Length: 256
Image (cartoon, rainbow, N blue to C red):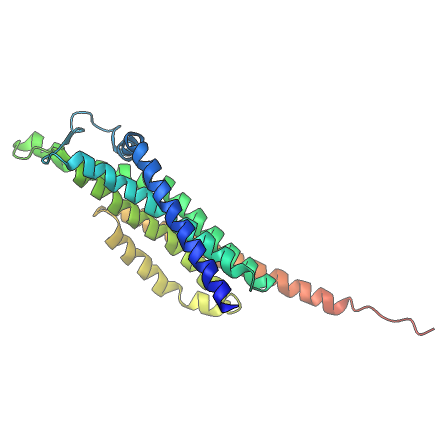
């Protein structure tokens, strides 16, 4: 029995590696399209600043390889999560299966949501914020002249991607934490003030050094926190009311 499980794990790892290789090949085949998707979020602000320089003859090739690795690694993580879930699903109870399925659905949804937020809000805003310093230097004394290096631009995109992905997964972690302690609403309300402080501290560290972005990030996390608390309180009241109805509506047996 154990040998069969080990063989199945071996097969799944082999198929995962083969899938990763195919993803890498396909990503490299569409390397120009993927590079365009990397560039597109920041190409609509100022055409004067937007061009790339390369200082190495192999830099363009290595950048294409880096982008292919980056996309392939993100996709294979989701593939491995799915394979792991399928592997352990046969030995789970129904409530465990549904619970893990809910967690994976939430994590995957947050991953897609973070990708959309990154390309349409976070990265363009960050690019515009840092680009304003270059414009100010040109207006004042023309000391600095900004020229975007291709490899450094891709590295900046990756760092912002990981940061936005981490922020979105925090929401999933908060939801799961509340699901574990949903029967103790008083404890959730008790940690409200420390959680508010943590939200603004995290927003200060994670966002660009501008008060508007920090307030928006902190207030958004607090809003989601309060929304989850209201949902849990409402759900607890519904469960309590349902239990009361079950107790009241006890079927009686006619002894006549």
